[in-house]
Amino acid sequence: MNDILAFGDLRITLVLDGYSALDSRRVYYPAEGPDWPEGAGVDASGSVAIRVMAALIQEGDHYTLVDTGYGETIKPERPERLLDSLAAMDVQPKQIDRVILTHAHGDHCMGNTLERGGRWLASYPLAEYVVQEDEIAAMRDSQSEVWMSQFQPLLDRGQLRIISGETELSDTLACWPTPGHTSGHQSVLIRSQGKQAMVLGDLAVTALNMERPEWGPEWAWSRAHDVASRRRIAEWAVDHDGLLIVAHDPIRPWIRLERTGSGFAATPAQV
Image 1: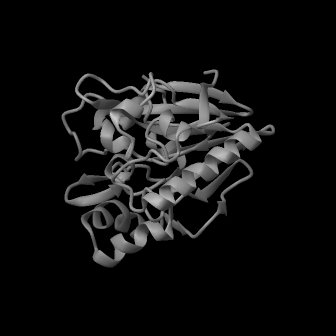
Image 2: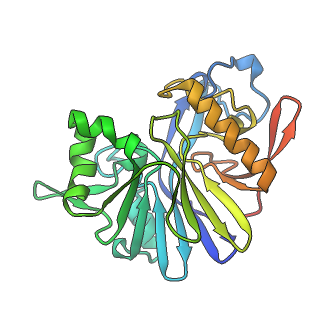
């Protein structure tokens, strides 16, 4: 199920690619179960349900996609597919002008390409793919499978745009480095008619990560950097009335924050 939000002159849609579940102890590390507030989304088995979503930003006839999901090789048995979800919206791959990759974990980038006849082809054949230099450096140096299948083919076709640091892409879009989850993780700033929003990628798996920035994924590349980035964006959101987009959260994907004694409180935004 997709979620749609009108935002100034833009339309932002969270487009479904699949479902999964994560160990809550790893999502909210280092907090233990007794510390989790009501509404943490933890089931009886100790798991947190998540959705794998891409954010589609529409400005007139122009489309930007943030992240590309599982692709065809991860969870191939799942009934949901990003390309099918886009097709149901009458959006074809050739209509995507730009793809922004928050980071290179499988549920965010393995839909960059499609394997056809032994060749890796761009899933979005006319799009520019935008990624931080720090995110691809290690993959490129090691010639990892993810680099060889999901990024090198784009580089060879002239579709990979490698940026470094905070980068303005247009009047409405910018990339902000938010390192920690990975070394080159970035979030996407959206601006329209005086309003501001941020697509968080895996800066937050659920809204609770933004309410308690010190609770974050155990598997982060650097927990210290991850917490610092989360605090910085939380403060920005409060100071600028910024809408935060937590695409993995099936309950509170669109939130605003306010300060509280223990951190922040998230209020669901109007969808």
